[in-house]
View 1 (cartoon, rainbow, N blue to C red):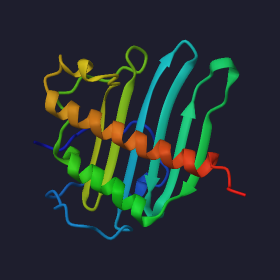
View 2: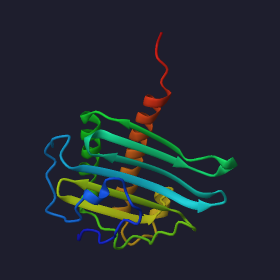
View 3: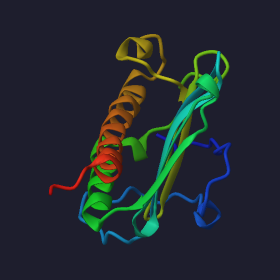
View 4: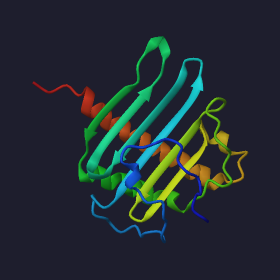
Length: 181
């Protein structure tokens, strides 16, 4: 498949340094944790309470940024930042590599519409490979059935779920853990 021609629509911190060139897929061989790596997952919609979203960004050298925004009852977006170890970076890289998402294309995926269904955006820079996907928000596997590219959307769905679980676990451990006396 051809790499996605889709351009990311939101400016990203430090993303201007990322190349949009794509080379041949890398093997699943372990990489240096601080090789050029970037991962961002965004899911959101415009609804009754305005722009509601969930987003994480894992930047080179282990900087993790998590945001969760809603205007329900006048709430402000929740933003948390922390550093993660090289082991966490390696795990995210492994999830991305084993998923096969770097070989997919969003060309046949449904167009995103934040005001109707919501949207999901995944951007990954892994070595010389850089992809950015944008499609409708996938609530369940049933949402994929009418798509022209069921396999690609299924890969995105499962990768997004794995990344969300990992990131939410890290955020909860880092910010909600109470020390043992």
